[in-house]
Image (tube, rainbow, N blue to C red; front, side):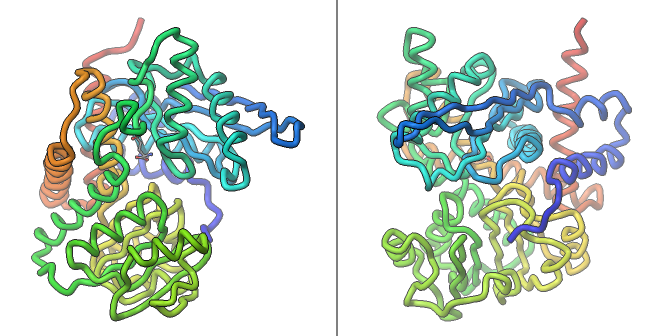
Length: 416
Ligand code: GLU
């Protein structure tokens, strides 16, 4: 599992490095290092056994210089304020790099949602929404799904917020179910976007896309769709993993069959079409493209040297520690950094917000075409910047993203 490391310090240190590259003024550095607002809440829930329980939650807005704060809500037992602050900051850079008019936010509750009944999950979600009600809104802070949450959770948030306002406010969240104003293609958007960046990377690296092998870590919303989309495009999936274990087959794995197995058994482990693999060995599997698509801090100084892939596509947020980054760079592994690779989700969230504001909804084809355009633009801008300034892809992505936020801040000025 993940190496213990404070992801907030790590994210701030990454920003410090970017600031040194850009030689920004100390005041701007101080400003961008801290979130604008942090709200910590105790979420009181009446459980099915009639007793009450308290869950710790929070919502963090890192930055709103370029537009309303935007970012998902995570339900996971390890959620803590530092992690949410880090993820909120990454959302600021992600939206900036994608060129969509949002700032960055994130929320979370320390809870294992698989241990709650549907009614408890709904109670938890509605009470959390109530606790953060003053912070969110379609023009100020717009939540979306993240690890452990989904379209149904977004529907409950939207409903609770709408009841408080006295009318339906679909724009308060994205990632809604389609009958409530959700966008076509939103569910698989993060994965589809990641695949577009992989295809662009293959182009600039001049790698022929036929017969390439992939390993995908995590089989949730991001990893599951990523494996299926890559498989549909003819890539060979040689390894898959989730919290329950890992599987390997050098002849290839059909992720659709794995999804059926998962439905029955709750994990990819034990899938009969592949051998079982020690999860510790996962990152050293021989493959061309490695996709970490679960949680942060999984690629560390301990396992980075074992990575044999040519491309590391970060479907997850912050999967790689700074020490691991150096090893990957030394080994000439082409990294598509998280804020570039996984921005497809928030990009289609933006499309959903735009469609809702216009009350006019796009076809899936249009969503995917527009998504491709934004992902390719962000990829080539980052790649060109990295070439021109002799930076690796992560530092180039960070530099571009930070520059845009700093420019927005300069133009707006400081009040009063
Ligand atoms: N939770 C996703 C992310 O980390 C999507 C956020 C959004 O759509 O606002 O990028």
